[in-house]
Length: 167
Image (tube, rainbow, N blue to C red; front, side, top):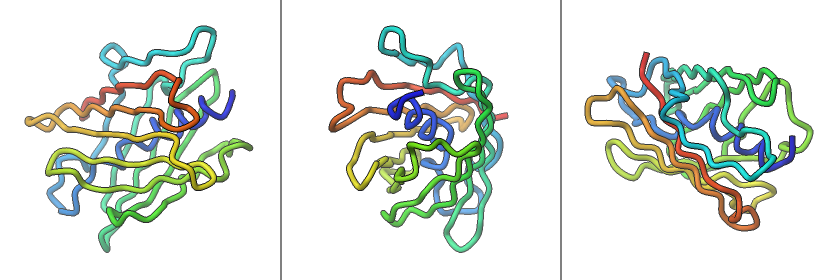
């Protein structure tokens, strides 16, 4: 799988981490399941799907203003697990991916809050932004949509609008 597809997998598997406010009664804390029927992932012709199949993501309050998102799913026939601990402080955080892809060691994500139900992150490779993510939760707290847009040298790669249902 090429670097672009691996980055999309990393971002999709950690996307829920983008949407956690800093309060204990957070509607995002819990378990979320990818709704494949509602997810729209335009892929370049012949490229493997960047979306994790059967993704289940669990969000926990890690205390001290930090959160941990763990995910498990399949992509291109490979089971991937990801863990990301972060805060909304604009600093870069590195996801832990198992099995560790050889070409994503320089991948980091920085997080910021847009409003009460919307968050943005920037994914960087070797210090250069390659993707932005905008995550919004529905008013009823049951659905979350993550819109991923490639930027910079990957701007020609189609984006992904992933939809998750709260379990």
